[in-house]
Length: 132
Image 1 (cartoon, rainbow, N blue to C red):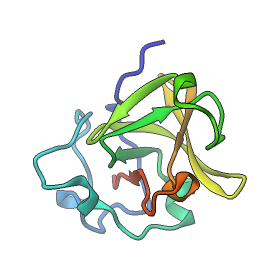
Image 2 (image 1 turned 90 degrees about the vertical axis):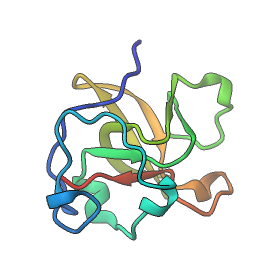
Image 3 (image 1 turned 180 degrees about the horizontal axis):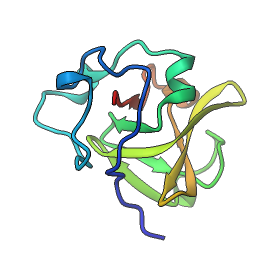
């Protein structure tokens, strides 16, 4: 399984609300950087963005792509790792009260990335929806 960043971007309810010039990202971007700490990119988004956004910015130095949407899984069962600034594609949803991203690559489901850090004791979100 190849775990590569997504590069084709879709539409999101956050488009035009800041973050990227003109409310959209260039279609060929797979990693973002150089704009300061990624934690500063975090916004106060809600369930509409979780439901509609298909592309997400990784804010953490690394996040694990896991086989199941279960925050109690040990790190050694991870499928792959994504890093800060990478754009990942997938569908957001709630699983057992926590926000998760069902990551997709080339239209196929790859695994789950935890969005809500509170599920593992961190008071922040690990991913940010990408306007566009």
